[in-house]
Amino acid sequence: MDEVFKALADPSRRRLLDSLNVRNGQSLRELCAGLDMARQSVSKHLKVLEDANLISIVWQGREKLHYLNAEPINAIADRWITHYDRARAQTLADLKTALERDPMAHDTNDFVYTTYIRTTPQRLWQAITDPAFSERYLGHALVTDGASDCEAGSSYAWRDGALNIVDPEQKILESEPYRRLVFTFHTFTKDLTTIGLSEDVIDRAAAEPRSTVTFDIEPVADGRVKLTVIHSGFPDGSLVRELVSGGWPAKLSDLKSHLELEVAPAR
Image (cartoon, rainbow, N blue to C red):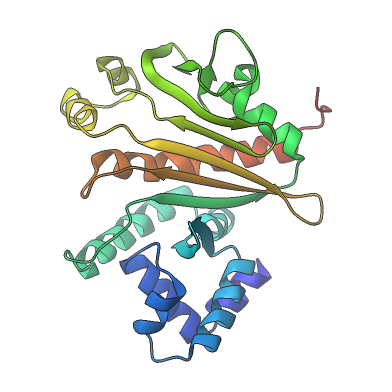
């Protein structure tokens, strides 16, 4: 966490994070245009923020886009803020963001979240794709034809406890073992009332275009693996994005905890 506090201590870096909070997914050129800093200085500050995992990088063609990443802040909250105080602080932070956000500002709408897990790419892949592990580690499972590994082109059932959502449009789009998994998000059905969603929320979510989820896995130093989750394809004002932006951080925090606490060897 030392890198996080060091990165946040500089006012210029806080301004960069504020800029991404207002409009996520900006290029270096866009960030420079909004700040009175030289391009080289902005690049150096972005590198510090990236090293602290406070921003995530997503390549769109040849363009490098920067996204605000909440994972380190969540880790600080988990360590020093009680559950009661965290809920109250989150409510105030959400209100502040809503009041200060420019309603006309353009946003890519993608949800991007990066976390570092002390595990192996093989074990992480197993935890994501094998229903025997993913339902316990993530809280849901992608079930494809009884196989443990997801295969590109196959349909999947979304299983969450007793909930089992089946739809031919739920597809595995890409599958590179230990590196990358891309799939269309599950369908919003009335069965989701069993996990607390109202019928009105389900109807509104079902009316939106189907979104896509990407898991990118990259081994890094010190026996850790970098996991970046990109949930994309949301329309402006998306209700589904609002729902998943609260769900994915909790799921990925649980995944990280389970993998780092386990002692069983990978199969």
